[in-house]
Amino acid sequence: MGTPARAVNRTSDSYDEKGISLQLQDADRKRIDLTWGPFTQVYRENDTGASKKKRLTKSDGTAHWMVIRPAFRRMLSDLLSGEIDGVIFYDTDRLARRPRDLEDLIDIVEHTTRPAVGVTGDLNLVNDADRHMARMLCLMALKASEDTSRRVARSHLAEAAAGELTGRTPYAWNPDGTLRPDRARTARRVYDQFAAGGSITGIARDLNQDEIPSPRGTKWAQPTVKAILTNPRYCGFVSYQGKHRNEVPRQRDGWGRVLLGEDGLPTLGRWEPVVSKKVWADTQLELDRRRLLDEKRGILRNPEGANHRKYVFTGYLRCGICNAAMSTKQVAGRGHVIYYCPGRSRNACGKVSRRAQPVDLYLEALIVEWAKTRSAELPAREETAEQDTLTEILRTRISDIVARKRDLTSSWAEGSENTKGMRPDDYYQALASMNAELDRLEGELATQSSHARHCRARDFASEWRTGGLEQRRAVVGEIFSAIHVMPSGKGRAPFNPDHIKPQYLP
Image (cartoon, rainbow, N blue to C red):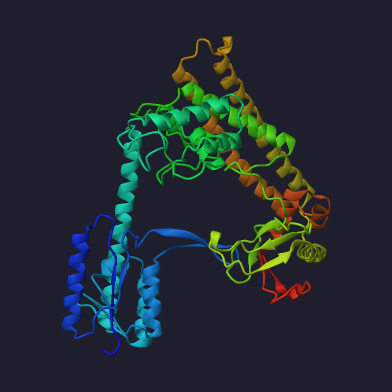
C-alpha cells in the first residue's frame, strides 16, 4: 500500500510488557502477510478502559455519557483524513466493547473503503459479513464487561459488609489496613483543630504552612479536609457508596456514608481507627451546627464547603469557542469585572473575554422581556393551598427529627441524665434510624416541593426585581440552558449584543 498502515493496541492494566510485545509481534506478522508497508506508529491504549463511561456536558447544558479513548479517536481521524490507509487491530475485544465506537470505525471504513483487519479472527471490516460478525462479537464483549462489573461491585459490597477496606486506600492507612503513624497524627490534628473551633479553611491553611502534603501530594483545600472529617472509616465504621446501596443518602454529614447492617447498626471495620466513635459523631454534629448557623446568617454553602457563586450569570455563561464555563475577575486599576475564558489551566482556550456590566444589562433586559410574555395558567386556589399544606407538614416533621437528633447527640456528648443508661449500640442505632427517616422525608419534600412549584403560578418579573442572588440565579435557570459569549474580534470593540447567544429552555 502506498501509505504506511498503523495498528491499534489496547491493553488492560493487568497486561505486562511481554504480553504487549507479543500482541505487536502478531500484528506485525499480519502486516507482512497482507504485504502492507511498515507501521509508522502504534496507537497504544495501555490502561485505558474500552467500556468505562464518563459524564460530559453538552453546549446546551444537558449531559451524556461516553467512553473517553483519545488514541482511538486519533486513529479514526487519521484513517478518515487519509494519513493512513489501513488499520490492524489485535482482536475485536481489544478494538471496541461499545457498539458506538465500533460503528464509528465502520462508518469510516465504508466511506473510505480503507480496510480495518483483525489479527486473531481474520476479520476485515470492509466486508459486509465481517462487519456483522464484528457487531455480534462487540455485543458479547460488552455483556461480558458488564457482567464482570456487576460481580466486582457485588464483591465490594460483600467485602465492605465483612468489615474490609474497599476502594481507594484512605489517607491514614496502608493497603493492608495498618495505620501510617505520620498520616494518622495529621488526621487526628484535623479532628482536634476542628473540635477546638477551627474552620475547615483555617485547618487547610495551617497544614499548608507546615508543608504537610495532602493525600494526593499537593496542597490542602477545603474539600480535602472535609473528606477526612466526614469519612466514617476514621472511627472504625465501614463506608460504602457503591452501586448496590439501596438508596442515595441525602444527609450532608458523614452519617449518610455509613454502611448499616441488617440490625440497623453501623458495620464495624477490621482496621485500627484514628479517632473514637464519639469524636467522629461529635464532629458530624458540629458540621451540622455550623451549616445551620451559616444558613441563619444567610451564608449558603454547597456540599463541598465552598461558597455559592457571587455573580448571577456565572455557570451559565460559556465560551463561544471552546464551550468552557467562563470565570470572573476584577481588572486591576480599572475597577470593573470581566467574564473570561479561563485558559489552559482548565482545559479551555482563553480567547474570549467581555466586560461584565454590559453583558449583565443585556441579559437582564432579555429576562424582563421574557417574563412579560410568559403566560402561565393559574391553578385552582384550593389545589395550591393543599400543596403548600403538605409541604409545610413535611418541613415540620423534618425540623422535629433534626431537633431530636441534635438533642440526642448533645446529651450523649455531655453525658447527661437523659443518655446515662444508654449503651453505645443503642445510641448509634437511634442515630441511624433518625438519619434513615430524614433521608425518606427529605426525598418526599423534594418531590412535593417540585409538584407545588408546578401548581403555583410564578411571577418571574417580581422574583427578578425583588429577589436576592440565589433567587435571581433560580430565575436564570428557568429560562436559559446556556449563554454563549462569542469572540468580538481584535481590539476593544464596543459591546455588541449579537455576540451574546442565549439558549432558551423549551
